[in-house]
Image 1: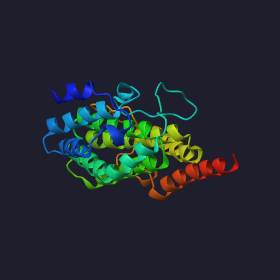
Image 2: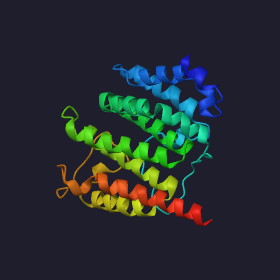
Image 3: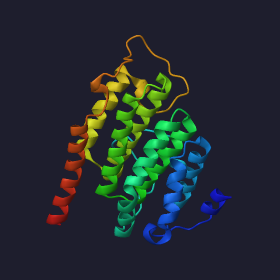
Image 4: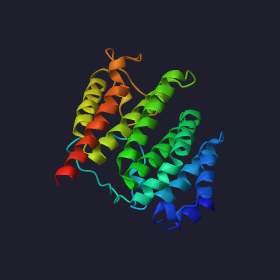
Amino acid sequence: MLEYAAMNYRTKLYKESLPSDVIDSLLKLISSKNMLQSLLGNRVMHYLIDRCNNRLKFDTPRIFYENSKYNIVVNTYHEQDKQFFQKHREAFHASLLTSIMTHGMRQINLESSYTLIALLMVEIPCAYTAAAGVCLAMAIQEATFDNDSFNMNQSHRLHASVMAIMSLVCYIFNAKVFYDYLNTIIDRRAEFAPHLNPPLKRIYEYNQHHVHWDKPELFFEDWEVRYGLWKCFKQDEKKNITS
């Protein structure tokens, strides 16, 4: 019933269309210890956030490659949407991270959380949202390192989801320097640890030369990611000044 109501709701500007108490209640559902409630919270939020019909295009983590075209719609930026996200960013971060680390062993839950992250980035395309998405991705990576309860297959899927989020940020904002760094990680993984890249798999197969331990070169470094973002939006500032 709740999902059906959300499906038929027409969201305009988030700040005007989505009351804070509704968002707070849904985020509590997403962070619930009950995996079905968490999944429901994510699915309802998809319908409320998705104004450009991108939901099914983000059904599972994938790499958005440089110089490629994808059938996704990046919405027009509105300051009111940014204000909405600024108000709720910490709650989104905490709820999604909790959901992923609690229920991420189930692929359907992990994919549902990824969908919401991707929708937020294409619906509110600005530096603030990009930074929030990258911050969440790095938090997922670090939490996966620290969590001993995930088996190898589950851990691989989490790291692959991080890659998908990072590549989407690069794609949305055409972040050249960030893409250079991302491509380096993609290529290293493709050679030595393809299980760390999308697509997600139920069971992973390994070749003899594949790396099974957390080799630092195969993962994202915080300072490299920050630099890539900074270069992207610093260049945008220069364009705006000179135009």
